[in-house]
Length: 219
Image (tube, rainbow, N blue to C red):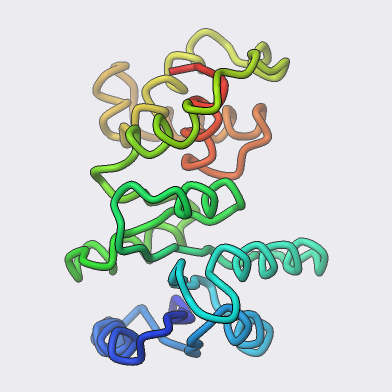
């Protein structure tokens, strides 16, 4: 059972998401909050696996709340910190980019299809990342590359030639299956390579890999 916390300042939106999740045998809503302050309190009380977090809310927005929750989880040495999926109305949203850089597992548009939302919850719970399909490269080109290209970090030299090839494909937003087809490898082998890449570059997930690629001009 995947335990989910809903955070949004619109009660009607939360009610709709709750009904959708209640229809799934593997998903359970364990709490709701209408701003970032309540989100932190609910996280402490319920310890959900996944948090659906609205970006724009009164009192405390989703970015600040997410940062506080993840920092507290690290300080408490939580075995499994929550996976945070940001919800936004805008496709290219600087706030979404900042949330991802802060540790969120990705973002999804509020008008996404129900099946996409359900799949995204399961995806982030499994340790992977989600970015609104139409915005992977555009988002980080616009909000990452605009600041200029940083020098190649020393940990880049830790990657093998094969790992760099797979890194480049992952940075373009390709899935494990697509990378496997491109490189004539099994999906299991690709998964192993991705895991090693993330470890060597000290990155948490594939979203941070995309951010890293654009910030260092590696795409």
